Image (cartoon, rainbow, N blue to C red; front, top):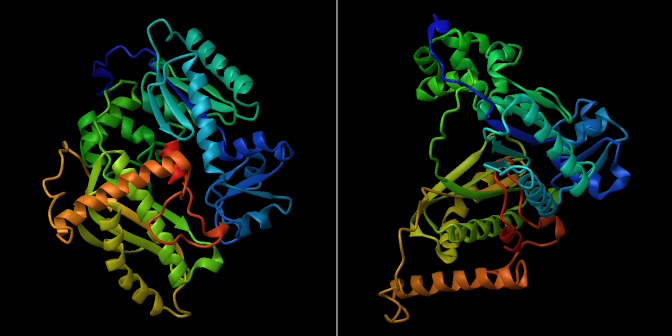
Length: 432
């Protein structure tokens, strides 16, 4: 029986902070006229896009992240739509992390609106941990903004602290102690656990696991078998409050995507946007000291919800010129796919991803810099040096101080830097 398993001591070890309706809350902080009103944040000024954030006032109408703007307006005639200002969200994120550091070291920045902090032995009694959480909440309200509320979960494992932060929203505070585990979790759904989506939920159901109680009732090895690997084993222990060390991870791709304004969904405007996305990805690649070996071009057409994609191999490179040349070789494939559709080329979203990336293992001066200027090796050396020089100029003088070729047209076509919820852009990216 499970009860016979000897589990180690499971003191409170993690405090997990989840900011409530973060992008919408920042906009309400910046625009007092939005406070207390139903608000969504949208990427562009078009009803064909979707909400990337909804205030709690909007959520009462059944509006959430991913709701199409036109549908949100039908659900709430008084809805206010405000454009996304991603650079401001990064600024507020940095201020919030700085405030949390005044109370406790930040162990992990998990996303733009989530941080995890490891509790020390003098901080992990329920009373001390609760007092710490309340002081963090008060500090954010006082020093960052009164609209920036958060839900905090405290538990023996990081996974449980994350789950606890979702149990009471907005402005919640939940403490899960070892004596409450795992039965306190049984009211939650499997999909509430990070990493369990629709596909994994179906896989677990085929093995007879339909609830968290079903998963916890198994022995760790059996739970791992249902999951399909050792992560199920780790999940079982985490749900029982055992604090396991993280597995090392490494970035595998660098990329950007962009939802196109309706007037910019033709072939040439889309090509210019894709080119800009490739240049942004190349700049990030250099800043992180990676090289890429694969370029992926992908998108969604207006008449099709599925992803269209194609790819081409790259030499091991971080050079903007080589990456843009590879994109140019791919472009006729996308053009042909678009022209074959009823109504012609109408692309709703375009994305460029650099894959098969690896760290630069060490650099030395090029042996080919002094070859004949028309030599391919000499051109590659010069173009990489030029790419790096453009990075430095844009960082010093601002976005697009120098560019490789033409940019897309008006303001609605501006690519900008977008927030992926699991990745916080460096401020340098806003100068790309």
